[in-house]
Amino acid sequence: MSASHVAGPAPDRLRSPLTPLAPEAKVVGLVAFLVVVAVTPASAPWALAAQATVAAAVAVVALVEWRAVAGRLALDLPLAVLALSYAVAGRGPYVEVAGLALSRPGLHAGLGIMAKATIGIVAVSALAASTSVPDTIAGLARVGAPAWFRQLLALSARQLQVLRADLARIRQAVAVRTASPRRAVALVAGARSLGSLFVRSTERADTLRLAAELRGGDATSPLAVAAGAPARRAAAAWVLALVPAVVAVMASVVLR
Amino acid sequence: MHIPDGWIDLPTSATAAVVATGAVGVAARRAGAALHERVTSLPAVVAAYLLVAQLLVVPVGLGTSAHLVGTGLAALLVGPSVALVCVAVVVVVQALLLADGGVTALGLNLVNDGLAPALVATGLFALARPLLRTRRRQAIGGGLAAGAGSLAAAATATLAFVVGGTDAVPAGTVAASIGGAHVLVAGLEAVLTALVLATVLRLRPDLVRAVPRGRPTPEPSAAPRGAVAAEPDRQPSGRP
Image 1 (cartoon, each protein chain N blue to C red):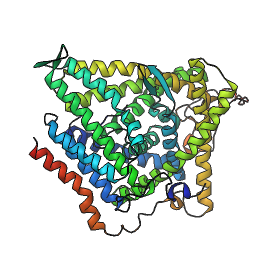
Image 2: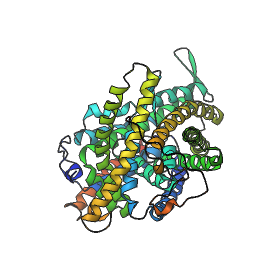
Image 3: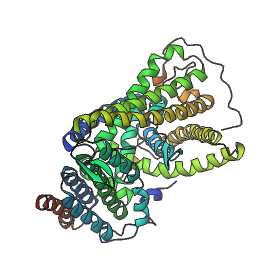
Image 4: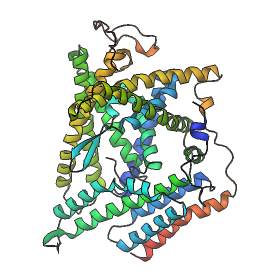
């Protein structure tokens, strides 16, 4: 297990015009943009549409893989149900849609939530596509996340890959021994795999601590992601990263 | 199911963020005191464990599926402080890297998925501890406690909605729908937590922090809390 798990160039991430920008600027820009989206009232659909266009444009520039975005948008499905329930259960006045009396404010609120969640997913995808995990963590560190949290994030991101592979192996072993088409048996087998994985994981945590001690220093130092020097052209990065938020503000003011 | 961007208004989200930041700060300090030098490696591994555990999805019909949230389980396994720190990592990773859950709703999700279930699950389990003398009962009790923690998450989500949600829909209706969905989620959480706990209790009972230790362990924080008779330490069988 080397540092290359995290530090190496991610093979599945294309190099886009947004990649070299300072990650802290990108993170702050994303949060600012999403805050603006969150305060845009759902009764201003054109403003939300404009903000969605901004998010989509940034995602295109960031060379987002749209198949991955589509997978994440599956998270929107429960929200569609929610929007529908708002429309059915909401207060009056009511509008007639396809023979159903639907609440107008409920419809607005539900669709607004769906729109905002979708914008959020697309915008985060743009960040994720253009920023490697260690860069994102370093960016968080430079905007004031405490050191312990940054180290935890870095180590977790690395362990995630290890544990995922571990779980796949355990599940295969359990599945071979308890092969059954019945769902309940599969559920028990899955839970048993998770229990086994926890035992292995804590043993791994001890190994990690031991390894860190052997390398000298405490358990945290070799794993720290250096906050490092800010990326070059930082000022330009900040200006660029805040453009979506500014455009979103203008959209919400003009198109209200 | 995480709270997405836009479901709750900004003042409520900001309040929740302040509460969550404070709680995680306190939890981190307590976790550091409890774990000594393991402060980084154990929470990091447990956070990764929670992220992986959520990949075990169970179809519940209508094309949707549910998965273990794992906060109650983690709280029982490593204590509420470490669990809360882990959930903070999980929620940030999911919001910023996986686009699951709103970025402006980070604080809300941390209160919902972290603070509420962790405190309720460990509190209930501690209350019921005198009844939980066998491993079987401990596993079942832990499952029920985690299920109750999941219901507590539903309660805080409803509270957030009443305070900061849209007024276009009667709050009672929303409470009913959130509660109804969470009865299912809590049931699944209870069953899965009980099964995972049963496995861990069989393999390494000393790793479950919520269960009083029957035998001395090298960890300094593991001082025997009461004169609970030790169960005969069954050797793990060949099965994982």
